[in-house]
Length: 85
Image 1: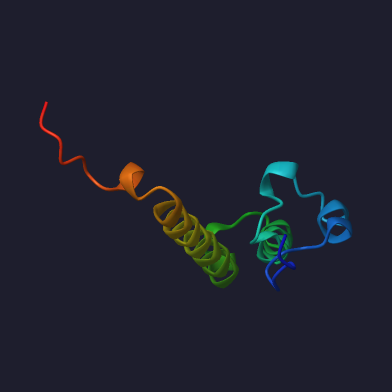
Image 2 (image 1 turned 30 degrees about the vertical axis):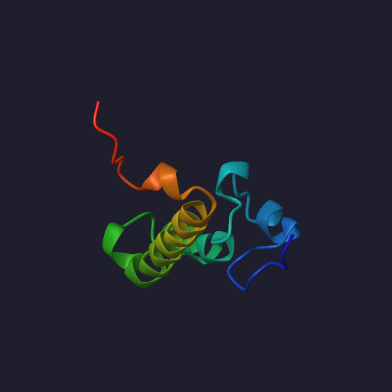
């Protein structure tokens, strides 16, 4: 397994921040300050735009990387079928 990136929180950091298991992914280190900002600002939607944008961009980039990896592994699963039925 590759080493964690700067956007991945350690197990101890995730536990301390009370991150649910399902959110402990490649972007978990960005979710911690986002959740702190949300709590500090009583979940006012416009207060944590920068943190939310960073987290959502990380999630998007991770999705795109996984899709590229899947395309390498299974090119026929992604490409449209050329067979006529």
